[in-house]
Length: 359
Image (tube, rainbow, N blue to C red):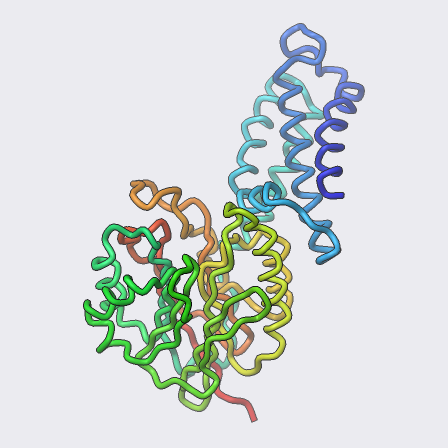
């Protein structure tokens, strides 16, 4: 159904525009000139992605899409840069209908991005609440400088470190760089062969709810961190990447499992790790609808990226795939990105205020 909507809009919108926009053939003296036609095709394709996204959000799991649309959702902030120059060109050439269509997409772009630059109000309970420092790092299974990455994590001074792609080799390097002494308490995924293993290491005491578990197809590491007057549950995970064979189907099933798992938890909760998704996917929105907030967005830093196209690329990140989602009993106080240190992901350190137990 979603694919049919995309095809219908891409094919129909330029044809309708040709009939409605009487100026469409003035650009180069040819019938429905190439440049306006290309502009309408871009508008149609983006409109199809946006409509399908909102249809999927409204219909929840009844609408399924393929990996191509999932990646288009992830890239929406970048894809929506395209209508801006088209709007200028359409205005200059007198194609007012095309200009109007592209301006609508430009407005949508602004509405999509501006809230991620705004800081959420600080809850009244935050001042004086205990604070925990959380580091989230995908260290990359093919990291060529694991000692440097491990040393960075040890030196952060964080209370809790979520290590994604925490292979046995990396954890041995981490311990050799002082991790064994600095972070003696840990919960790990026992899988020694997967590229998706996750570990939580901490200098805080672990509570009885700390465990590794499987939730359907999803592997989850849970650490209960003892706080002053309360305890904090940190849920660490790394769902499958969309570009892996069968990855999007598995990822969708894993997010559905997470959605069913979260309501079973109580007290302050943080979901942290490489979620292999930006927040623009409908499945991500469904997790947020359970009462979770993207802590980085809440601090007005939602446009900071965490994934690079290559580990050795000199360019910065392009999208944010690494997240920390908090329920109403946890609130971000500050956040900073760290150096990539041989990874294709940029780690971050987040200070979190944890609400004291109510009652």
